[in-house]
Length: 383
Image 1: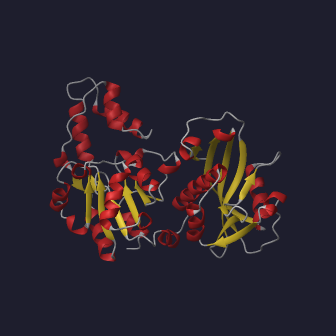
Image 2: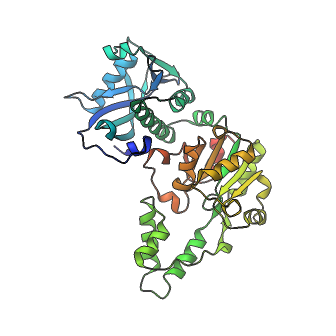
Image 3: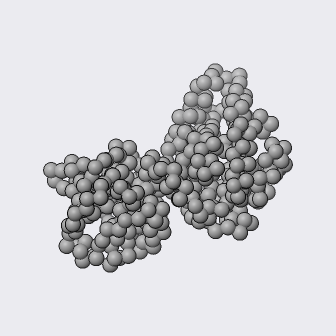
């Protein structure tokens, strides 16, 4: 099963230690019934919400454990099961490790009695059924007090984000973005195609060397797939000097203006949060798209650059917008997705340019939505 991400004490508690304990294995579910409702387990004693599931017992395989846990906690029979992915937890603070295997499970409306454990009964545990939007809100926004609750919440958040990208239908995705008033964009490899810039840079970088263009480009892609800055790592690997960036070769993606115009006319406020050299507004004007943006915040003018969260706060302040009512669209996990996630914005990862080769690994790298190009934004925002 695909590994969604690893969650460690460093992610949630800020410490670097790791545990070598033998792992525990669990099976968990994003559970949907015929009414389009999703199951969430509520422990009233702790005011804590989580997705259904539990430990895999001796002699059980994953699916056997999944069916048993679903029946015990919700009284439902699994009718259709599809893999979402696996999450690994390393809780060094309590010397504990765990693999949680998450599945998308469809169940019917023939519900039997639940069979909670004595501990679950003491915790005043109950199953609730809500829309996907409501379940995500309950799990994402709860105030986890203990370290254990923080890990439970983090793994369910990652699983639900992966579920949304793989299985959520159009109506559900629209509902998840229903509170968005502002859409902020990166520029490079998001609105602007930098393909020719990279080609020119690589050609000049390997000029008069015995390293071919293809060899250098392949090394760039190799590093990019490791979530590293591919071109900078490649020049270091080959002991070269990275050639100058030819900004004059930048050009809008063919769909950029059409998409911006559609979002603008739909009533969304649009903004820019980008690491750019001086003159960003002038370049946007020359491309004919400045008219769609109410806020343009660029690093050269602001004196602060992504991934510093300050540049995001400045944009939100200028827009007079709460983070929860804004979404960041960008190609870089490190510069766009992580800081926006940290401050509570929604995030859309657009898999273009070198950033598109990366793979989300940590909890904060997981976007709320993933698209392959700008045209897919139209479906997300129903334009």
